[in-house]
Image (cartoon, rainbow, N blue to C red; front, side, top):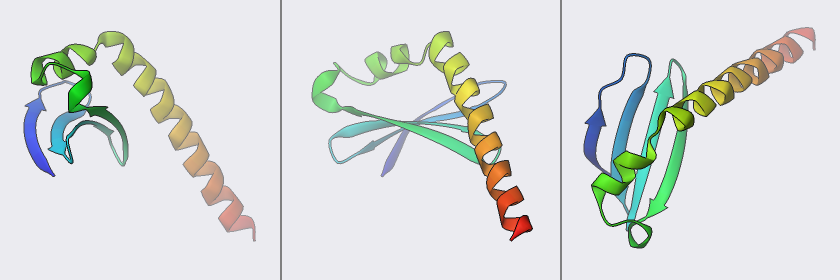
Length: 82
């Protein structure tokens, strides 16, 4: 997997990789990460992929990060009660 772009952001670590004829957008927040795979044939290039990283995508990602943290915390609570 080859890193093709680091996108600066005040909240997230955002990276775009190229692997197996796909672009992979990785968004990290703390210990959690989300990945989105896009076939190279579905876009015209890296610029198209960057344009897909919208404020709406990042806002929705934050909601998923909160849900991920809740799920992970619930798992710890279950672990500690057994």
